[in-house]
Each structure stands twice: as structure tokens, then as C-alpha cells.
Image (cartoon, rainbow, N blue to C red):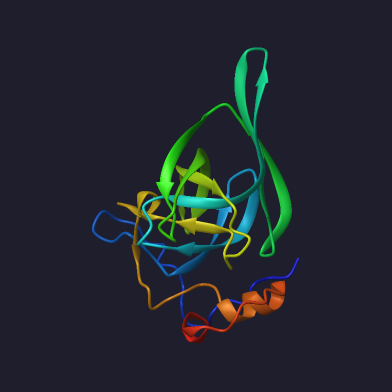
Length: 176
């Protein structure tokens, strides 16, 4: 398994007290507990909700109970699909980053960012055209982390190169 090159000068602040929350950068490697490790995630303080790349999203009924089944990930930055089956989900209407209104399913997943492990909600979304398969929004960040947007634990250009992602170079690629 290839490791995503980390920047040389940013380390997560893993010291946690009430007056000093964990400081994270604009992109971090996160774990989805029991599902997958070291997944690249974009930290987005402009988004309220978190989202994760999902495919083959289906509702199934078994013995009178409704289940949500899907494959998480299966994205260029995390190509192995991880099956998910849960009866704890909801449907909600959201406004996406393009301003369009759409219906998405939301599930709870346990994640690890730095030293913190917690459960939070994710909407299931097709993020195939995004560099990061996971977006972490304000709801997950609130009262847990401070975001220093000048820092990152992921070299975005190296990630794109390693995973063969062919998107036009933009200003964000040039940030170090």
C-alpha cells in the first residue's frame, strides 16, 4: 500500500485540554473505525454536513424492516469499496456546493481524526469528481478541533499524482 507523502513541517497538535483543542489542517488522513484506515479527507469549515463517497445506494426490506445498503468509497483515492448495511439512517434534503437541492441519505459512522474518536453523521454522495472521497464539515468539527487552513497533512499534488487523478492544476494545488 502506497503511503501519501506528508508535508515536512505540519504535525497534528495531539495535546487536548479544554483550552487547547486539537489543531488540524485543511486536509487530513482519517480512519473510519472498523471500515478503513488513512483516508484522505478535506476539512471544510464552509460545509455544515460531512459527506462520504458512496455507490449503489439502495433501500431493501427484510422481514418488515427497512435497511440502507451501499458501497462506501471505491474512489480513486480509496479504490476498495466497503459494503455498508444499516437500519440507522435518514433521508434529508440538502443544498449541494453548486446550489442545487437534492435528497441524500445520512448515516452515522465512527471516525478517528488525530487522537479523537467519535461518531458523526455523513451524507452519502457521489464524490467521484472530487479529489477527496470524504468531506468533514462543521458539525463534526465543532467543539473538537480548530482548523488552521495554512496547514495540511496531505500533499495534494502528490496525492493526485499517486492516484492518477487528472484534474486541471488550480491555486489550491500550489498551496504548501
